[in-house]
Length: 366
Image 1 (cartoon, rainbow, N blue to C red):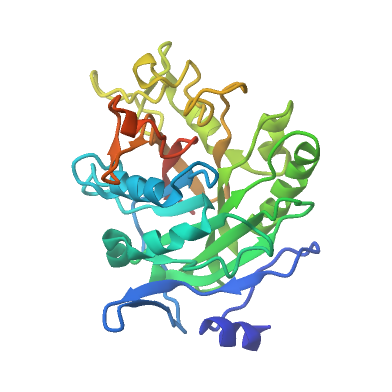
Image 2: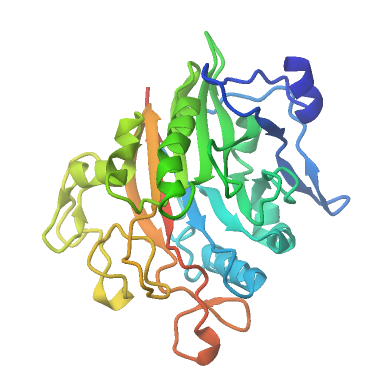
């Protein structure tokens, strides 16, 4: 296995897989933009280095809706929103690291727009530059953007087809080396989109999340995290993460902080109250047209016949603490210039996505 993977990826990789049988993993490379040939090329790193001690990491997960019109324009608007200094949820804190970005429902036509974006080229490595590694027959899929500062620490990138999927869904894993001695310790980040709808979807999702949980709890995985569209639509599914041994980051934060009556979270992530005037409002407010439940991530853009729900989640296991979580893209629409906007002009009536994104700040601990 070692020699096969090294030929595929250029890395002396040993796969850390669960004991239970699973679909064979599809091993991938990371890609970076090379200015000399002006193209995306495979990163060849035969000796990944352990990640030095850091204060925190950030994870951004966003289902960007492949079925809505103008997918390339919507992606361009999303990227403009994320990386515009005037309004960016990523750049409003100059000391915070760039997040690992997990995208679901990427339309294949959008790879060119993603790969051409100036900030993406300058600051990120990509797990995919085409749909070649997606499951056979997939009309949309996942891609993970890894900050270039973390790329030297990546040991493995791989996918596994989810069990019982009829929608060609999979999980995309990125392994980041935390330490190599006396034995390897890995931070494994999974990007996924569980089966949709009721009926078969309701039966498949527990098996799919259980499969991911097994990959997140392998012996050398010190911390495992999965984020994405969990399609939590059926009775009992809010308890599913705990059933398979995962913690729900949103629920952890609600327990950790003091939740005020108005839905705002007051605290610093360590159970300590902030000073007066430093409360962080994480609820859906009337002005943002996102309902009463502050956890909802879908059902407002646009309103539809189904009730709003918390479909998108960050789940984890192992050595990690949640610091904060916020929703991004609330009310974000497209304009003809490819930038985000929220006015009422008819050209602005196309939502960037029917989902809100989730931006989580985490701390890795022993």
